Length: 63
Image (cartoon, rainbow, N blue to C red):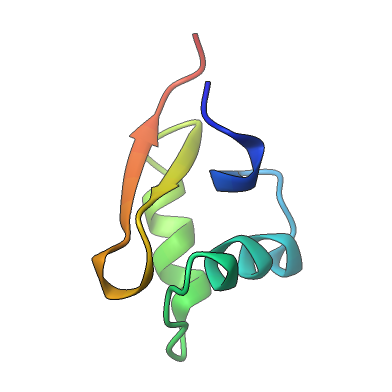
């Protein structure tokens, strides 16, 4: 399991998700919430890896 400071779960609030993304320097354009929802639809949680424009999302399933 990844560090909880890098994990976005389906049950997380928009505010908490925003805090995690901002901590990774991920730009948040208008409508970012919709993109996050679409990514989370296909997995149990996301792990944020990297920083800024080089950040990547790893789609993860609970074990």
